[in-house]
Amino acid sequence: MEIVIIRPVLVYGPGVKANFRSMMSWLSKGVPLPLGAIGNKRSLVALDNLVDLIVTCIDHPAAANQTFLVSDGEDLSTSELLEKMAMALGKTSRLLPVPSWMLEGGARLLGKQALAQRVCGSLQVDISKTRELLNWSPPVSVDQALRKTAEYFLQQRRS
Image (cartoon, rainbow, N blue to C red; front, side, top):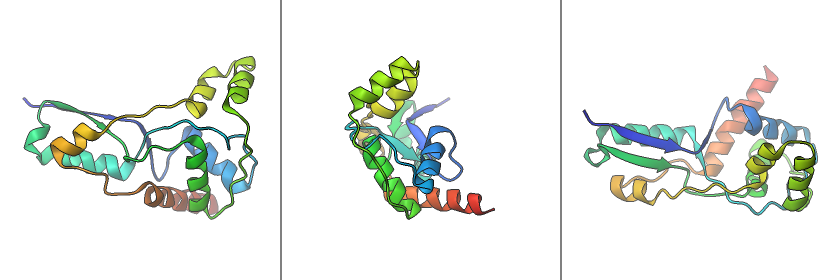
């Protein structure tokens, strides 16, 4: 029996929940966010890109018995992600440039270190093995995926 292990990072797309949806909600309401000075780097993967890699692995002979990391191939800071997300929503972002050390200190005082780590910390993966071994690249750009995610979010809010 042949197996393939695919290890995705944070997956987003239409219907996304949790912190990602909360950030879209805050941006759509025009809430000022103290996240404009975060210089971290995070890998994300759009659902469409993850599905495309799964389909590729099903048919590709080089995929057998391998482990693949998957992302959109464009690592973003939290600030960059929020800017792109706001554009996808057709809104102006209101990001206040509060240094990450201040956010992390405040989160520590409130017992929210895990949340601060998710927002301020970096988590990057290297998808070069996935690209080279499978001749695969993410077919959907971050901007396209965020637009699709935002359209669904806005449609659900109107319903």
